[in-house]
Length: 182
Image (cartoon, rainbow, N blue to C red; front, top):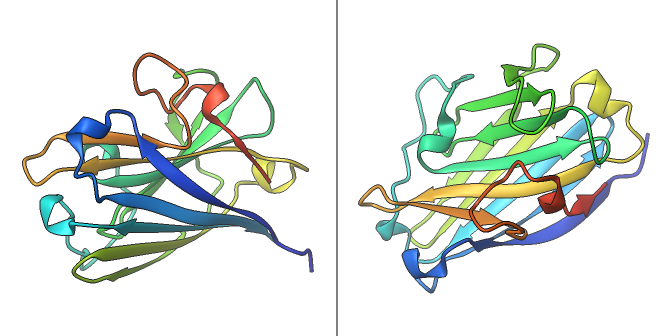
């Protein structure tokens, strides 16, 4: 059995003026035995946010990024295909493959269903996900990751969170934002 490789992370909003100053988003990512484990901790005034309730039948869904959604972008190098993971606090998920920067988006068919668990309280939400990696990612010796999130306010305004925001606008697909290496 391989030893896990992992990293803690802290995400920052693109525009801090649109989120409550006490809101914090952090977590941990690990890779082990062909799986990616992601833990997101959202802390602060959660009553100011739009957080969907846990679904009775969570499943694979499109357009999760139109409201609160935890995301991760994965690549095996600086160029070529990359993958986008979307995780909803409602338990819905999706995994997409893109052929190049924002092109060729399609659901990744060579993936298993992730395991998601949500714990929430008055001031803290924790989402845990164990994601089976598609063969191309599982076989890679090193992964480049961009950990991100879209957070919706109670009024529906979206804020964009990432490890870093290297461009003039929020853009999670930029490879220079894939800062973690596992």
